[in-house]
Amino acid sequence: MKNKFLLFCLILPILMPVYLIFYHGAYTNHEWRIKVRGYDPRDILRGRYIEFRYDFGDTITTKEIDGDICLNGDKANPNIVIVNPHFNKCQDIIKNYKPYLDERQRFYIPESLANRADKLVRGNIKDISAGINLRDGSIVLKNLYYKDDSLIQYLKDNP
Image 1 (cartoon, rainbow, N blue to C red):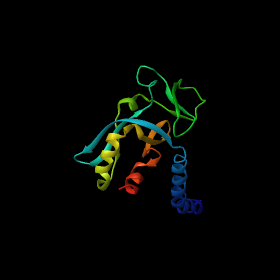
Image 2: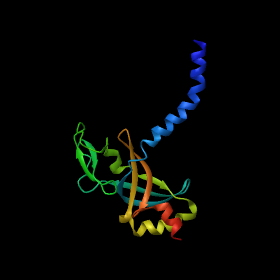
Image 3: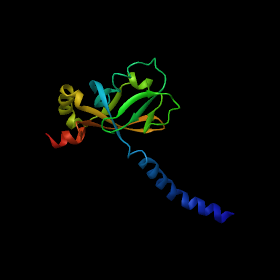
Image 4: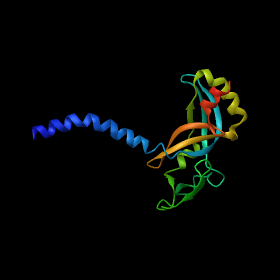
């Protein structure tokens, strides 16, 4: 019995990081692009960021409709509709979408790129989209994109 416990204690520190790597990896392959709206460039205490709200389209602008958001189709330009919570014909589902309609999201920008990011985003908000993953029906913000490029990478490549 002691040998099994000792073996378990020795293997656990190896298995746990492997499990976490695969668990995290399962959510990085399904990045959806969602349009954003709104913009605010600065937090005096924390630095520069882009503050925005998710734009789920004209059909999802009210909190009065119950259901979940269904994402189907092209990941760069998904078809977004509200569905019954038990609907299972979606590639991905955002559960309890209502807080995302008003809740502002923040994407922090390195200080060295902040002024250029401010100018770029201020004039081109329609070209900015959020790269999200879903974890248990909740949105996890992964990146912001300018057209098809990562916003940070675009700013670094185009001084």
